Length: 232
Length: 232
DNA sequence: GGTGTCGTCGTACACAGTACGGCACAGGCT
DNA sequence: AGCCTGTGCCGTACTGTGTACGACGACACC
Image (cartoon, rainbow over all chains, first blue to last red; front, side, top):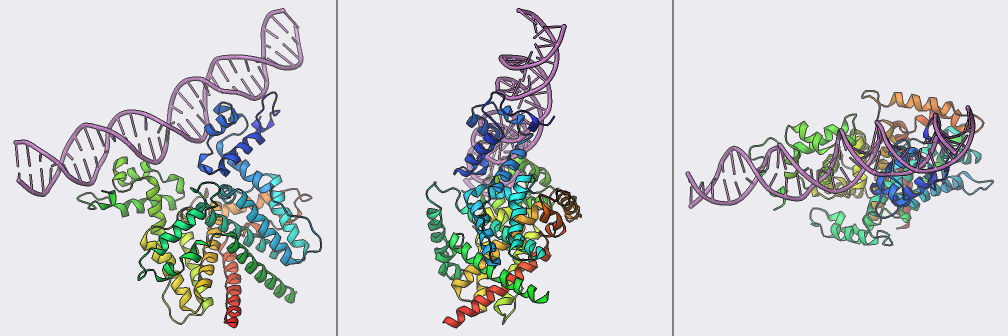
């Protein structure tokens, strides 16, 4: 029988959930995803290494479970009578919140196709439903869904690495300062724009920029929807 | 002295460029980035493992060099008298071309801040120049630059994993078919939208979808630019 | 010929994921 | 009671990774 079928915790305090929680705790710390090691998880849980393989078939399955857990945690506050714009904004915000809360996990989200029913329902079905409920035609809703996920993914991918390596609490400010200094110090004859725009460039992976992009997307999607509505 | 300072190729046929080329060749094959191993590169080049450390301080430096090489290869066909829309389109296309040509390397591009002058010039300075040349205000050009890079990054991140694991030449079509089948087979009561929209969902990470997104972005950026122009 | 210096690489070590098999202990049987 | 079998636990060990150390050989110069 598959490992999942075992009665969980006959007497032990460890479980699938505990393992995933430990893994998320490690990866969300400054150490990052690389620190998620079968051995490190085992010691963190106070068990032997191979014990974990009683709950997961491989480390990859643990990573899958992490992605699933994070995905399932997506939160869309329920409302009624939303306009398409409001729904799009809410969905975009939900995605990016997800990814900034677990920065290192965003790699996983993109590289793993969602498999569990829980995360599938939360991250696809419910989100699509939310969009369709506002009157967006289903086919268009799918496109919007893809666009927003892609946008959030890109944001996470662009932002996350610039946070790593900074002491926690830094919020990446120190790293940004160093980066700005580096850019500003380039030869101005060869890099006139980079030198001049260094302050703006380092601000790219911030939430302000993200909001700016979301607003743009929402506007343009809304406009596309109106255009579609004319045709039908 | 640093390894880079050595006269390259006193008599050996191997060089920094050869190593990077081999690494790209491996990672672009179906094996993916995981197959880029110090040992695999060494055997591919017909040398000993440690020879590579005469050219790079660490494997990480090799990955940096790969990212730099790919970034430097960005191609923006020179034109004059472009409209902002045309420039934005060209830049977006250039970015995504880059990432689809080296799908697995797109991970690297996001996680590594550009360091070499060559890639900095090609991927930042020149791109920004291109945008500014069309009359876009520099600060806005930076925002557009970030948005486009982020968008391309998200596209690559969303598309790439769905190509891995497929035999080369498949172009991911077989994988897509399987995914569609899986989605379509879900319980329709719980996943009505996913089941109904399975065909559209699997088409999300395609270039058509990307073009759709680019057009949307370009239009809205252009409109935002016009609005800005009114104010000044 | 001696004596660097420099590119090459064989060996070895720490750490990764994980296969194998033994351990302890539960519960149901006789 | 005594046993037996299933089931979680995990010590050990194997393969594969990145890389430090130091030996080896080829050339340049005195």
